[in-house]
Image (cartoon, rainbow, N blue to C red; front, side, top):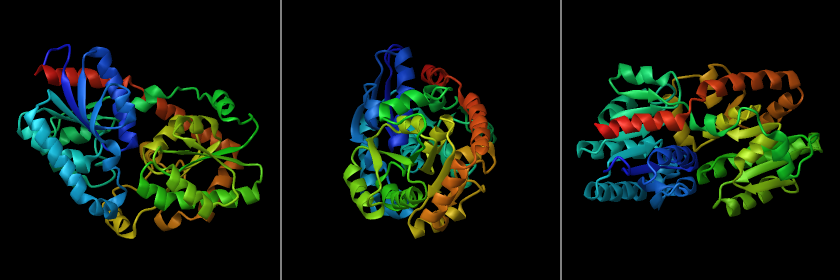
Length: 381
């Protein structure tokens, strides 16, 4: 390695990881213009010059039941990637989220003398606290998105740095609502609901039908409502079939990606739990969080749950600031009912928007610079 051109390996396992890794790579390239980065990633990373040996959607599975069905393929990819990196050793490995895939890979690379950083620490404070021992064995340093996380890792003897959340830097403090509406063809007075069912095939199968059926109920009660739904490239044909089945006759503006435009333009979002809920909070949007998975996956997950909240905005605010409808509670009727409550209560919308603004400022820490500083120190050792 030269200080001008380190060679990194990275793995991001789904759309949200690709987005975060792409933002991180942008910061890294500002410091090291000749940076080389290889591994597993998606289009946001590719736009920063990343060389993907496998596409990130190979790892995008939904729940334990689906993970078991794809275990052999995913384990094979991890084995092949490890073998390739052990032959052509990078200066540093960065695992971006995807802990079930990345921690085992990090452990093997770390044992071979390749420094391993984990970006986006697993939610030990919300699920699977026992994972901390695996983290200690696997990683040299954790780059934390949330301010309370470094103390948790420090108690376990794991070096960690709070770097803020890159989305808080990328999303403006003042939401560009008027411009987003103009681009999508909505007038300032129209009521717009964004439907975000998730970025993985399993999420689309489990959650999209509920959101679509809720839209069908809402449009019967409020005929003037507009709906916009961003779809991850590659899932459009699957979504079109679900739309025909669950919301026939409902006019929904379907976008190829462009979820930030949809969130900027909308008054409210019905949204799958995950990183997208934090994006919605950063756009200061009221939301109804929904999640549904295979029955067996849910039985396993609920036993490992450590907090009453599931959605990231509620976890960070330590309050049910927005409603959560999880598993059997995520019915179309309940989703429509909670959506109408937001639409009929502008004062509540203003209050939650103010809380989200405070959260945005807390997470806005120039993540690319902070993370790059931490990575530079590790490379210098």
